[in-house]
Image 1 (cartoon, one colour):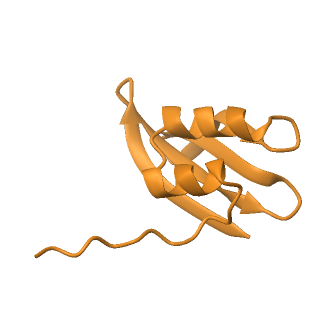
Image 2 (image 1 turned 90 degrees about the vertical axis):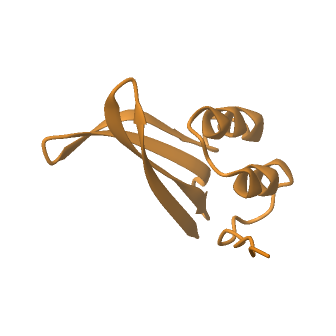
Length: 87
């Protein structure tokens, strides 16, 4: 299983995007709006009810890093992000 998270702002609202690969659900993405210490689900999708192409579209829409989008497109496990070395 892999799980990754990041926070971003969408329409002046702070949201948390969690995504990854689970042995039961397959690929998944959960988007939660952060309000006064509580989270309100905006989106929750996984491979049990959506095909990989649909999951890929949701992940693109919410700003998942390109490396993970490529791994998902090739049906590979999601691995930690590569660090780019500065020269």
